[in-house]
Image (cartoon, rainbow over all chains, first blue to last red; front, side):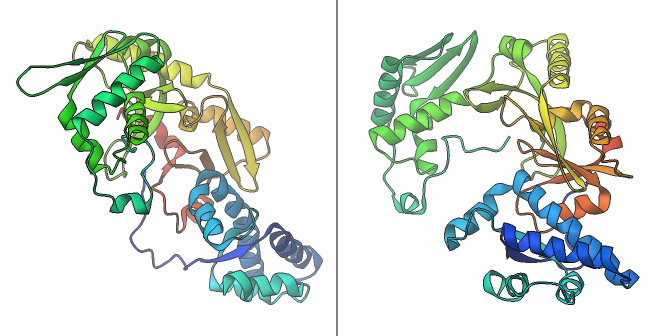
Length: 115
Length: 253
C-alpha cells in the first residue's frame, strides 16, 4: 500500500486544463486521427497515447472524487461537463502540434478556462 | 471513520457566530426528538442528579450509551452548531444517527468494507459497518462482546460483502466499481478482488499489474500501476494505492 508521495522527480507536473465534453471529444478525435493516420514519431506517439489515457482518467476522477471539481464549477459558473484534464508540458505540446486540431479545442487548451 | 459528529459543518458565517449551546437547548431538542418518535428499538432518557449534572442515556437494542448533557452541549458549541432550536435538534439527530452499533445488529447486518485505520488516513483496514438511514456507521465491539462473537461478526460481514451487488463501469483503461443499493460501501467488492478482475476481463480490461485506488466510501478504481498513479495525481482527497495481490494482507481496522 502506498499513500501520496511527497515529491517524485521522475513524475512530470500535470497541469489541469478545464475542458468541456465538446473540447475533450475534439482532442480525442484529433489525437486518434493523428495516431491512425500516418507515421508519427515514436516519442510523440507515446505522449499522444498518454493524452488518450488522461481523457479517460479525467472522467474516472469525476466518479471517484467529484466534490473538488464541483466546487470549482460552482465558483466559476462553468457547465457540468467541464472537467480538469491534467497534462504534462510534453503531452500538451504534442497535442498542440497536431495540424488537425480545431481552433476551438486549441483555444480551450491554451487560453479560455485554462489561462 | 472521520466524519462530522453533528452532520455537515456549518457555513463560514456560522463559524463567526460565538453563541454557545446550553443544556436547556439540548433538553428541549431531546424532548422534541422523543415526541417526534424514535427508531424502533431505540430508547432515549435524561437522568438527573448524579452530582455531575443531567445525563443522556441511549439504549439501542441493549447497547447503552451515556453522555453528560453539559459535555454534549460543549461539543456542539465547539462544532459551531447554531444555538437555535432547529440547529440543536438537527445536530442531535445527526449525532444520534452515529450512535454505536449494537453487537447483535452488527452480527445480523454488518458489511465488511475498507476504511482508514488512523486519523492521518494513511493505513487501510477492514471494518464492519452497518448502513443506518443512508449513513454508514462503523461497529466497534461493545465491552461485553466476546472474542468468538467478534470473529463471527467479522466473518459474516465478509460473507455479506462478497455477495453485495455492484456495478462495473469501464472508462478506457480504468475500471470503476460502485455498490448498488447501499451507498458508501463500494470498497466491499475488495473482499474478493479476483471477482472484480474477472468482471474486468469479461469487459475486455486486463491490466498487467492491477492496482486499486481506494478512498473509503467512494467508488473503487482499478487499473494498471502507471494509470493508477496518473489517476491520483493532484488528488485532494486522501487515497491509497494497493496492488490487487496485497489486498488479502490487510488486517482489521
